[in-house]
Length: 570
Image 1 (spheres, rainbow, N blue to C red):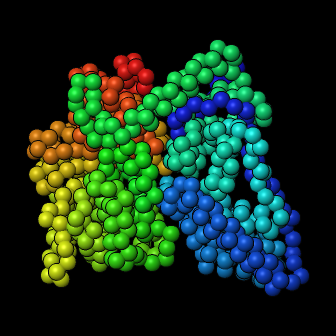
Image 2 (tube, rainbow, N blue to C red):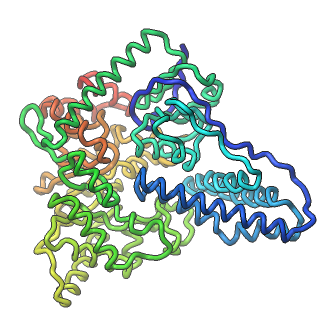
Image 3 (cartoon, helix red, strand yellow):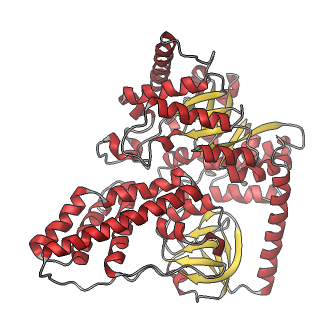
C-alpha cells in the first residue's frame, strides 16, 4: 500500500481500478512542402473541423454542466479564430514552405511562451489553453485522437486533463480524477466539482507510474490517492462511503425542510446559480432562494452585448423558476478570470487588481445602465435584490447606487412598473471593504461575503497559481477574522450577512460560520441538502465556542483539525 499526497480539489471518496489516460500522440515530421497553397487549405480544413468539434463539446458542456462552464470552450473557439495566430501559420507555410503541423506548432509555441513570460498568473495560465487548441488541430492533421476513456467504471489518472478531455469522457464510467499537475482552480478541479466527482490534483509524477488496473482509493476531501490499499484501509473506506451514502439519502429526503439547529436557530440555505437550468436544480435541491445570480452567463458565449430586453427576459424567467423565493442578482463581474473579448478591455499587467467588476461597470455607463434597467423591470412583482461586486470604497458604492437611482427615475418617467423598494447590497471580497464594514453597513441593506477573492487578496496568493493556491484557503484565521468583523459590523447596524463564496458550502467551515453568526449560506445546488443536514446537527452555543477557538489559531490546517476534533461527522 502506498499513499500519494496532492491537493484536495473536489470532495468525495471513490474506490476503483486505476485508468491511465493518455493524450493523443502528436509527434510529427517536420518537412518542406511543394504546394504551400494546398498545405494552407489543409490547415484551414483541420481548423474548421476543430471548430465544429469545439462547438459540439460546448453544447455537451452546456447540457451537462451549464453555460458558465461551457464558456471555456467558447474561449477556445475565439483563440482558434484569432487572426494573428492564423496569419503566423499562413506565413510559415507560404513563405517558409513548412508543413501545416510544423507551422502551427511553431506559431502556438511562440504565443504560449509569450504568455508564460508575462507577470500576470492568469494570462500565463492561458498558455495551456493555446496548447489545448493546438493539440486538437494537430490531432486532426495527423489523424490521431486521444485514447478512449475506460470501458468500465474507473478512477482516471493523468498528467493533466484538458477541459474537452474531461467533458468528453463517459461520466457513467468515471469515478474520479487524479492528476500529476494542476491546482484547485484548474479546469479539471472546476469541472470535477461541477460534475460532483472527487478529484485530487498536483500529485506529481508518481501518479503516472501507478499501474493501470490496480485498485486505488481516491479521497477528494483529504487530497490523497492510496495505491493498492490493504484490507483494513479498504474496509475503513467502504464504511465511510456507506455512512456518507446513508447521510446523503437522509439529507435528500429532508432537503425541503428548513435548516434549524438543535437549539432552534434558523439560517437560510440558498443557491449560487447562473441560468434558468441552475434555478430549477436549486429548487429541487431545497434552496430557499438564490444568494448569487451570476449575471455573466448573459455576456458569455456571444460576440456582442446582450440587450436590455434580453437581460430582462432572462432575469424574469429565473425569478419565475424560483417561485417567489428571493433572488440576489450580482451585477456584471467581468475582468480578471472572466474575460469577455468583445468588451475591448485593454491589457493589464495584473487584471485581478485592475478594471473589473464594479470598476468596469462604473467606467462603462451604458453597459451598466442597461443591466440596471433590466433588473429593475424584472423586480416588479418579484423578490429581487441587487448587489455590486468588488466594492472597495464608500465612493464606489455611492456611485453604483446613483446609477441605480438614475435608471429607476428613467423607467418611472416612461411609466414602466417598478418595485416599491429594491434591497441593495455589496459583495465583501476586498479586504478594504471588510475593514470598513462598520461604515459601509450604514449604506446597504445586506452584505454577501465572497470568500474566493477575499482569501486571495488577504493572503496575497493568486488562487489560479498552483504553487501558492494553498495559501488562498478561506479557513486561514486571517480570513476568518475578516469574516467575523464583517458579520459583527453588519449586525450592529441591524443588517444581515450572507456568504456566496465556496466556503459557505464547505462542511469544515459551516460550524465556524454558524458560530460567527452568518445569516445566509449560499452554495452550489448539489451541496444544499448536506449543508442543511449538518446545520440541523449543530448547536449554536457549541458552534460559537468552535468559532472563537478557530480565530485564535495560526493556520488553515489547525482550523480544519479543530473542527474535525470538535464536530462529529465533518
